[in-house]
Length: 123
Image (cartoon, rainbow, N blue to C red; front, side, top):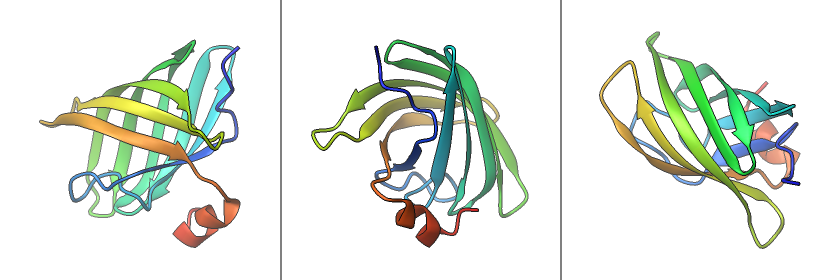
């Protein structure tokens, strides 16, 4: 049985394009009965939400976010969950904006310590 994402905090490994999710962004995941959802904030993102499904090690979700400049954007993402040698989880993501041009890939990894979340200023 795959390890649950419920209650885990994850962060991108590298910054994306300016104005998007970056290494200061923190995602707090929830999971129940094949459903996943998360809240995220940090960096250029004031508030973001994602919602979708999990089947085995595959996630499929939509996301929407509000940036500090007052703009909103939304998109779709498919992710593969894997375990790192130190036991933390990694998401290998393929995403595409639906509200604007753009697509790409990213790596998001479980944050090692709660102190990292506090330092990022995520409430």
